[in-house]
Image (tube, rainbow, N blue to C red; front, side, top):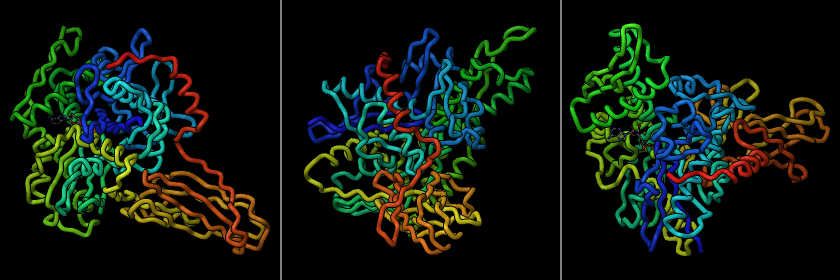
Length: 522
Ligand code: ADP
Ligand code: MG
């Protein structure tokens, strides 16, 4: 029996693990690193590069090097938050056919699922090399706060990578699984996960053999990238004032600055001051200019304080949604590289009134949890029960533009709810339903998952036909819709028009295109 791998497909870094001889192990890549940058590039001579190889040439090939593409997945091109978060991205983002975001590299508009698929395929290759056998099944993690579209796109990415994704699990839940496996104590824990692009908070109850998520909250557009951007903007402003030169116009300078800003941020986790030193950053009639400045931890805290506060608002809401108070939480597990920033640790410590647990590796724990779940899914002894929740309320738009929730956020999945629809006109033969996820009372402020048309309704007076529509959220957090005619019990046909996901034909085409491209290992 081939083994199931667990993949943490991160915004910044990806990590793969497997249960080997009863124990989860993180698999090092060819270079010996336990995580690989989630980066993809097409080099000047047309080679496809992934992971460390892509990262290594990012400065000189910024326009054709993709980082943080997970920030774009399942998102509309015209969404204002996307525009803002990617303002300083060196690669070009374009609008796809159904309004989704795509990435333009060497004349091809890559879908975000394809980029994620290429990264997953690399992690699969890393695992196969280590295990010395082919791997075909995986558990892949996603931010808990990912909506249905983002989960669907991740599933598509798995297919593109040649993997059967047995289960999509939430990153903080995976971390809790890795933390709590084998634990016999009953306790309530909080998992605070701040990575490069996303933030999640989950409150879980661990009891003998049961891992139950009580509540989850977060923000899929908030992470270390935003910390970096604050530093970059701060430095751009200082440099502009001092030298009268705007570095925004120079891609390579911007890329060097971004790298230096991130490095300074990381240094400030252990030091009081950090230096940003970039010789020959610009040139004008007066000659070469150098950028050299010192950043203190205090300045960093000022620059990012409001971001940290935003995460703490979600934490407070999540604890409340779980029906608990901070004192009920016995352990706080920190996940994600960005939790190494001291201001983050301080905010979490202050809120829960206790220092975070230091026993887990924040970079590896999610992949380990995914591997544990993978081995549980195929093993005979089912002595661990994992109960997760849906992060967002699911509902429909009413005729007056309001949002009518059918399944509330934090409902345990899988779950199924039905709703009976009828017609508003005599002999109306079709009803259009818009399905959304979100917490706003107004439909148009929530995320549109898709439109469903109930067709072929037999002629009848208004209000007479009864069509029962069932909304399922499966264990992956993915939504499925089905309908039946109440009178006849017959299946009703549904035309689904989902926004931003790939069709089966498109996936097949991408797989075929990628078959003859060999990626040099990273
Ligand atoms: P993801 O889950 O998005 O792949 P990671 O958990 O790998 O992300 O975290 C990546 C983020 O953590 C990056 O923004 C990186 O700059 C930040 N990070 C890594 N190490 C440190 C550190 N020592 N101090 C502060 N931030 C760090
Ligand atoms: Mg992560």
